Image (cartoon, rainbow, N blue to C red; front, side):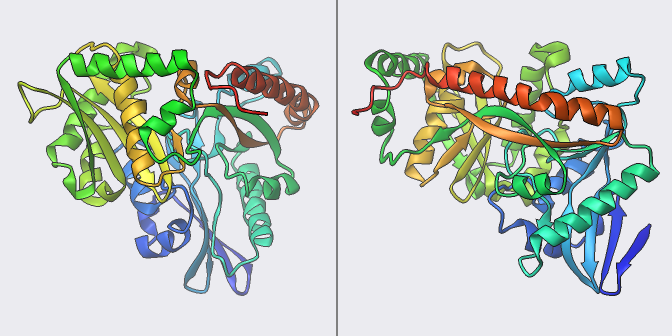
Length: 393
């Protein structure tokens, strides 16, 4: 369905990103810091069977054309549940149920299964961003009204884009992630030097435990990665998810990992752990994505329980690689207060929300200030307990 907005603009809703030429989409996405809004990543989600209607992620992307040129796009999904989002809105869904309001379906903007900051509308630099955002929000509001959708939600938003959405009436909800910052480090020893003496000893002990287990960790990127390692990474990912049962978050298919070799390996970093007895088949791996000066941890797994391997493969070796490659920030992935003990402070991020039911909207606006203040206090409390050396006053 195409709706004419004005003589030079048209807006369309599409159910697969492949409907847009990759070059057109990436002309908008490649300049962004985040890698997770690029055509190949999102298309892999769809063609691999990971982000599909069957999985509860119905692609419903908004695109805007001027004549034959793509000038704006928004990756969007119609959701019948809240799994795979990592922003836990179940309390809002429960409240809606108690009020007799249908919470699902809802319209969601994020890169599927990817709790990493950077979501925004993709808008050509030639356009007025505020005006184009308003045009797209208006299209979203009309779509939701026509289709009885309860609300529109944007998660892990780009901090620079958030004020624009707030000006267009969206309510901001504060959360936090654990993010490592490169504070001018030139070596891994510089990173260690930021900690107090006790934590420096702990980190050295944890890395030594991996060495004593007879393991060697290799970092592999781009064309260095053998094709079979992508299937191997899926096996580790599957094994880790299965250990947690219902909470395992096994959202990605084997095909998703395999397709990365062909079309996205230039952004992939694997940390692979090998034994002295077998230097061909890793016994554990972590999977990261990198772009520019950003590094993102995604998944990890090991078939053997080896003391401290998780910490080394997911934190220490990636940080060592990051320092040597000019990385400025490292987001290791969702969850885990254990990250703060390894130099990942709690860092604010925001989601943006609009409910179309007046009662639900009123409750959100009435209580979100108190909710956000509680979150600010939690962030402060976490960061007051970091194991860093005292800084000179």
